[in-house]
Amino acid sequence: MRQLAGTVQNSPPNPQEVEVSLFGPGFGECVVLHLGKGEWVVVDSCRDADTGLPAAIDYLQKLDVDLATSVRLVVATHWHDDHMDGLADLFRACRSAKFVCSMALNCEEWFALSEVYRGYLQAGGSGVDELRQTMQELKRRNAANAVVAPQFALAKQPLYVRANGMPAEVVALSPSNAAVAVMQAHLQQRLLPQEKQRRLRVPDLRENDGSVVLSMRVGSASVLLGADLEERGRPGLGWQAILDEYETDAKGYEGMKIPHHGSETGHHPQQWSRLMSQQAWATLTPCNRGTKLPTPEDCRRILSHTEDSFITSPRGLGKFRHPDAAVMKTVQEATLSIGIEPGKQGHIRLRRNALGTASEWEAELFGNALPLRRILHLVE
Image 1 (cartoon, rainbow, N blue to C red):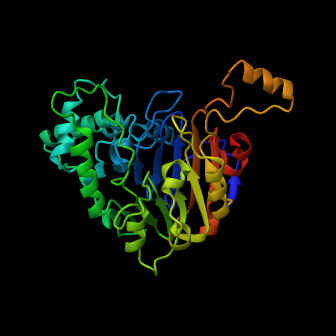
Image 2: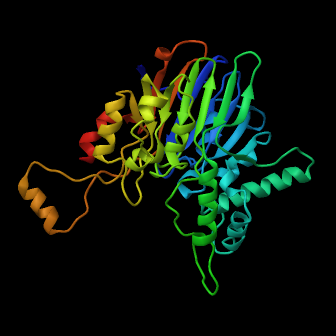
Image 3: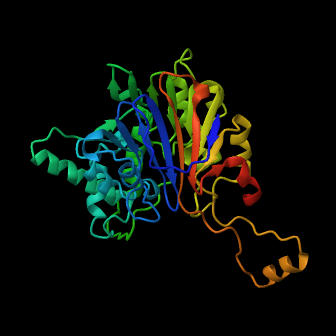
């Protein structure tokens, strides 16, 4: 893979080029896809650290893309806050786009959850509220006699297909039927307040069984977008469910957006051998809140599969090291927390001709984005 300097961010792709752009952090991540022929898809949302706009809006405006007419899908892979910041603003700007979310949210418990917490949450302050506002925008469009409805993603379901000219398709690979049932049970049992119980925030539901993994194929190019799907070690759930349904003669994907910030919990031993091509690339975003990800072990595991691995910025607050023992002793005695400042937003952009070969992918790195191999000394 050829790595470019990444100095001209506002250079648009040509009509035959496929693009995969990954943004993040400060906080969260967003994927922007060009399907060729001026058609775009946005997956999840985060805000640009400088402008405060949703990263996809900021970027596509720089490319002079008409968001109102050129974005075909806006996809919410799951409702965690770090994937939803600015989603409602993004969808309002993409006026002709379809909205896609997990089939796990197609239940009374989800709508009850969004209403219960509406009075407690600052507008735009959580993934639940962002999705609630997005649903309100769908209702507004329906009132204007537009043909609108949320598209609830389920495994093996085509979300977008273009047959004429340069073929393109975006297909959901998850959630499975079993995952939908599990997530809906969690919504009812663990998220909705019980009688005489008041909650001031939505409880953290760590499991991502209902997360929407996407397959993108345009011409001869193919990419796997792993969202935050984890491996549960249970039949019918997580990555095992995708592997069980994957056609053995299917061409391996040429690149992957690594799930769950590179965490071991998003990895399955057969992920690379069965789903990916031999020369595949990888991109990911770090997690700078709570447990810092990726760990050194995560980085080494990913790099063992592909040296063409890129991260949008270093993760925050790695261990402070100094060659002078006296300096280290002073820091320890002062109980100071010293480390690498959490990275500001970075942008990884990969492009190739949709009618070309996998070897033609080119990577451009903007902002704090860098090759994954370069951050190992920062996090160890």
